[in-house]
Length: 232
Figure 1 (cartoon, one colour):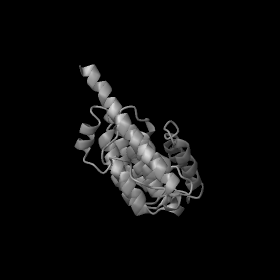
Figure 2: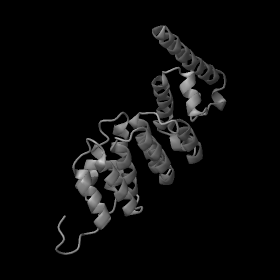
Figure 3: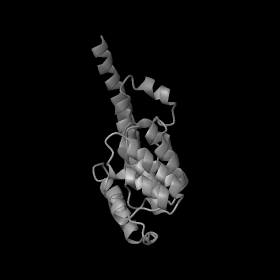
Figure 4: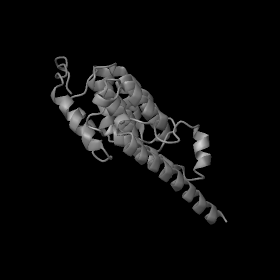
């Protein structure tokens, strides 16, 4: 009986997704002039508990669907020309507020808001959702700390995020020294920034993050020289 219920639940979920995709496809064919790049994922406006009920134990399947839906428009090369920060944030938040356990979603969303739309303030809410969903992730708090570092924000806040990242299971050892340096001196050296950027290599969409971050690092003013007699 339980096996049959699982099968019926899966069929229901797939039917819902199929209907959403079919509606979207028809809308695209009939209304291309009115087509919008950024739209919220189907069902994402609902209460999280209601989504859990509707998906009948297959919440992970919905999270995958909503994440793919969101990442598709985040990866659009002309995103900044076709939308604005308010619209993009609303679409992202409609999904991340349900705390899907997919690390790449939070990283790419944070990077897009902070770098493409210059809204690092909104990136912080997305990162907070990610840390709730994935408390053992070191990349999410490190991303938030790195954004603050690159944009010259409060270095103590950046240090706090690096300290959080350093405490996560499996985090690289250099994060602790990087966090301490941010706390004491307010900046990271080139190798520490380079190591931080490389941490995104293993995630889906990480190549875009690395490419754009390296571009930022090349244009970044050198860190201030340490006081005489102070070694790095």
